[in-house]
Length: 180
Image 1 (cartoon, rainbow, N blue to C red):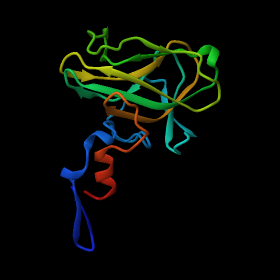
Image 2 (image 1 turned 30 degrees about the vertical axis):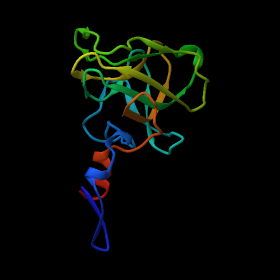
Image 3 (image 1 turned 90 degrees about the horizontal axis):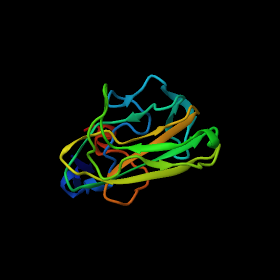
Image 4 (image 1 turned 180 degrees about the horizontal axis):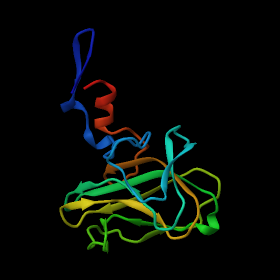
């Protein structure tokens, strides 16, 4: 990818640091076919504090995720905006393994079953989880609610490194917006 102004090349893809971009595509509007979700996850009319579309999870153990290939020894951080209707009925568990028909596969990171509880009701907050990959593999990082309450998620950001970055588009999304 190259960016030109007045026929002068200003920027090439070699100069763009890939680690600042989101590793998940379509996090602004949940479009595309790359999203993995259960039947009780739907797009909502509510937007988050970045003015991005959100998804609503209405039942326990529903998930929203994307497959990502993780490399042994690399550290990743998943962050997102979350709003819960009733904090007394919401406990989020973080998982980074692949969810299959027979339950969960073997542990592929150093960060399984991390819990977030006591979230404030009716207020957008940013949550994050950092994890290190233990073997080269496909991952599905996500939060799942163990209770039956409405939980809204928006502005997902998956980045390399241990610092949760502010929401940003993916490099693929940027290329499509610029026409290349």
